[in-house]
Length: 342
Image 1: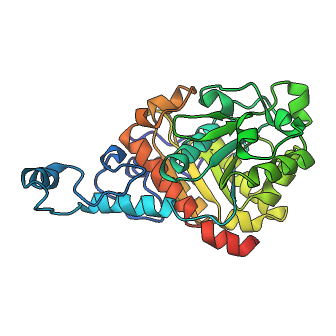
Image 2: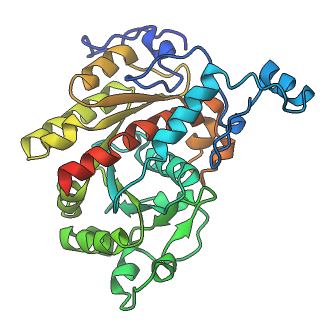
Image 3: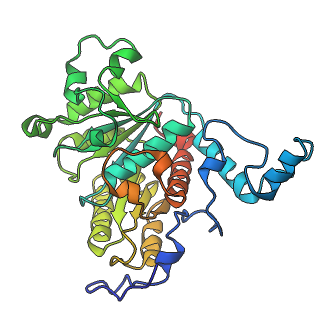
C-alpha cells in the first residue's frame, strides 16, 4: 500500500509503512507470516494431514501416498487456527459486535466472523440484528423468511430448533441470521427486556450467538446486549474519525461498568480501498493493543465492499485468512469466559 501524506488534525497517528505491513490480516498477537496460504488448500470441515499443495503434494501423489513429506509450516499454522476455532463451547457463547460510527464495516465483520465459525465448527451459529435503525444484516444472506426478532418473540410455540429456524435465514456458510424489525417505529421500541427474551430463546438452541449492535450506545437494547455479552468485538476504520469513535466507545464502556469487556475486547480495523486516506495503522494498532486483548487488521476486499450477500468462496485469500485469524482469537476466550461468567 503506497504511503499517504499525513492527515490533518492527527498529530499522534501518522501515515506510514505500517499500513502495508499490517494489510494482510495478521493479528497483533501472532507472528507476521511471509505468505498468505489459501483456506481452499485446507478443508474447513476436515483436518488434513497430507500435503495440500506444492512439491509436497506432488511427491505424495507420485508415490501413491507412500511418501508423505508432511504439511508445510503454513499448512500447519492453518490447522492450528482451525483447531482453535473448533474449541468446544459449554452452553452458549455471546459476542457483541459494535461501533460508535456507522459505515466502518460492523455488519460485514459480524457476517465474516459468524460465517467462519459456522463453516468450520459443527454446531449452530446465529447472528442477531439488534440495530434499531433498520439493520441490514438480513440483506447479507439469501432471504428465506420475512420474520424478524418481533415475530420470534410473538411465536407462542417455540419448543424445538425447527420452531426457531422458521424465523431465520441461512447463508451458504450455515450461519443463520435473525433480522431486525423493518418498521422504524417498532424497531426503535425494541428494548432491553425484549433483547433478553430473544437471548433466552436462542441460548437453548445455538452455541454461538453474535449480536450486530446499533451505532448508538444509549438505545435500550444495548443494556441487555452488554450485560449478556461474554466478549466484545469493536470495529473501526483506519480513518481518523473512525479511530476516534472507537476510542470514545472504549472510554464510555469503561466508565459504565464494562471495563472487563474492554480489557478482553478484540478490535477490528477495516482497511479502506488502496490509495484512500488512512492513519498510521501501526500506531493505531499499538494504541488499541494497550487497552484491549488483540487487534486484527482486515484488508480491503471487493466482494465484501459490495454490501450484498456474503459468500466465503468469493473472498480474497488475504481477507479469508484475516477472518480465520480473527475467529481463532475470539475463540481463545471460549473456555476462559465461561469460567468467568458461569
